[in-house]
Image 1 (tube, helix red, strand yellow):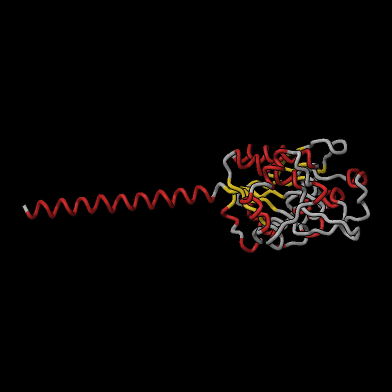
Image 2: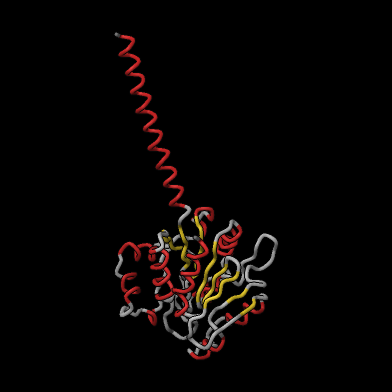
Length: 259
């Protein structure tokens, strides 16, 4: 009788222990799945529009609209910026009559992340399926020369991830080099804010460089639509859009590639 009781106790203990391992294994698997289902949105830290005395930052539509597309598709979104910390919104883009913009800025969880973005040094590329560069004129000053951001982008792309950018966001791509030394954009079809659009908003002389011209210099196959018309192109695992009207389209095409 004693031996039977002892065996039953041992068996129950083994089942309980096995159950614990199963639960822990499930948590680990779930954690890994969540980590691999994350998209990184890159925002600018720069808030001065050259020598104009005006404020700039990231363009709200170009973060809020893709954020909505990504999260509705089941992805988790995190934010990174060249320096980490607060990412300013371009006041010219702060239009809350747009429902997606309103949802974005009125969500305290999102805004806490925007005010406390990760730095590139805090980001492990293997944890992300994609990286997306939101635009705004501020990006022209702090995206191109950030080597850590460029290395992060190259790593995500070369591990099979998707890279996206819209409007001035491709400023973050102009100096990204792959492991073979070639520029990421070289030979790829690219859309971005055009020289004509920059002239139309009166900022040609304010910009540190013209994005269209720089992309062509990097041997990208630059393509464009008429001013301020939506235009999205997909080239391998690189998705780019011309202007704010293209933000949703870029995000949708990125989701398609990720499925």
